[in-house]
Image 1: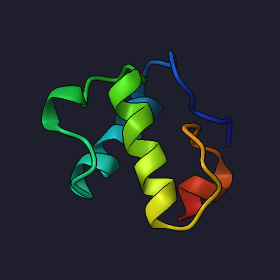
Image 2: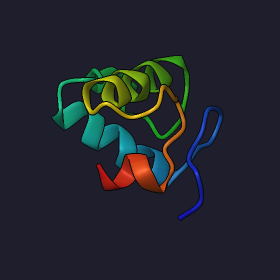
Image 3: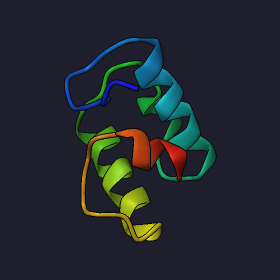
Image 4: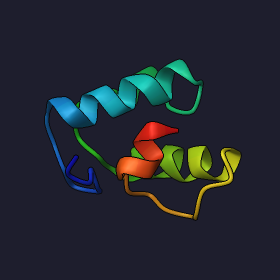
Amino acid sequence: METIKRNDTGAAVKDVQRKLNQLGLLDDAYVDGTFGEETARAVREFCFQHRLPDSEDVDDKVWAS
């Protein structure tokens, strides 16, 4: 899997955003297919909650969690 990161756009980003939204980490308004500051914040919070290294990128390890 290719890492999904800030400024990426498209279906993969929207998929990540939907999952973060389902977990209560991202508001509906930010499920738009653009990886911006709010998505980055939500990914960092997800990593913190799952005891993963601090990151705002969605790599294989983050996705698997």
